[in-house]
Each structure stands twice: as structure tokens, then as C-alpha cells.
Image (tube, rainbow, N blue to C red):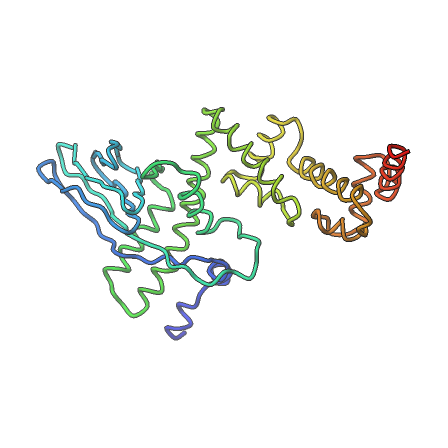
Length: 309
């Protein structure tokens, strides 16, 4: 096996990479050990900075907020945020720093996102995660830690294929980070019912405004960064209807307005409100309204005539 074959992109990663709109770029990575006598000036960067605490205790002052860090904690500082690292351990504090940014690629030809992607992560960071940083607590044997150490080793080697391998490891890192963030997000929602209600309302409004698209449960749950199963259960608890049934009802209500408003073909109405076919539309419409779309249109016309008379 030659070097090129040895480092060929695995098919699973190739599909993942091809569907990204953002390419991760490592600015720097390093491993540090500092004692309590070490001091750091307040600074800020134009990139993300991820710090993983291996040993010891520290405090990160980020945009005026103290973030306490213990072993297996990760903090991700957003760009352009003032921050300062303070060692609190009597003994040395050991940590890994990974600085990174993203380069915009050409938009994907597919509108359907992958299971978990870099785009998920960035959307979460920019739209759903308030504040200047993100904190994650990991178990001692978490895959994220393993990948961070692999990236460090490849950076230290500086071999011809290291940049390529670091890119692949970075993709894998953000798959794991997205999963960890989603899990922590859901756990937080369980103890913050008000915030969960806000997210569910956002999801509901998202369906109201995008019902004509080929939306799936996966698409809507991703919009609020929740897993499909958790989102479906929470949505039904809150609104007493499943997300799927709610979306169908929104589409039917929109179709009723079009049926009553003019002579637009039923097949065109079906497609314009998000149904894949007229037959599917007819079946769902009759299930919700008890009559066919054509019968509904006829009754609405009769009502208008009677009002005029």
C-alpha cells in the first residue's frame, strides 16, 4: 500500500466533507502546563479558542464572566471576546489549547443537512448559545479528548500528510462536539422548562413559515438543536399534537385559503403547500376536513354566491 492509498479519505468522512458549507482551519494547537505564579494578560482573537483542562483547576474570565474549570472541562471562546486565564491549583494546571476558524465553501447542492454537521455546530453557537463562550463537561474517556490528543500529535509530527489528517480529525471532532452540545442542551432544557417552551415555540413558528418546503422531523428538530425523539415528545407534551400532525394541519389550512380564493389547479395547490403529490394531498385533506378539496372549493363558492344574493 502506498502513502496515498494509506491516507485515502474514508467514504463516511468523504460524504460528510462533501456536504459541508464550512471548512475548519486550525490556527494553532498546543499543550501547556502552568503553575499558580503564571499570569496572562487580557487578550482577544479573531478566531475560536477551545481549551481542555487535563489536570488542575483554573478560572477563565471571559467578557467579564468567571468560568470555573476543572479536569475534563472544555470551554470554547467565541471570536473577539476579551478573556484571561487564571490558574487556581496549588500544583500545576495542564491544558490543551486548540484555536480554529472556518472558511466558507460553495453552498451544498443538497438542501438536506447531514445527521450532525459543522453547520449544525456553527448555527448552534451563533443562534442558540447566548454569551461569549460555551462550556462542556466530559467524561474521562470521551472521544473528544482522544481526538484532541491525536490532533496535537499530528501537529507535532509536521509530516507531509499531517495537514490532511488534521483536517479529517477536525471534522470528526466537530461531529463529537455537536453530539455533546446537543446532549448537554437537552439536559439543560429538562431543568429549564421556560427555555424549552421558547424553543418549542420557535420550532412551531419555523413550521408556520416554512410549511411549503420538504420539511422532515429531522429538519425541524435540528433548527432548535434537539434530537428528533426528544423534540417530538416535548412538542406533543406542549401543544398536545405531534409535530408531523401540526405541520400537516398548517398545510391544510394554507390550502383551504387557496381553494377558496380562486381556480388554481388542485395539483398546483398541493405542491405549493408542501405535499409531494395531489393524491397525498387529497387523502390528508379528506382526513382533516371530511371532504375532498374539490368539494370544499364548491362549498366555498356556494357560500360566496349566497352572501351576494
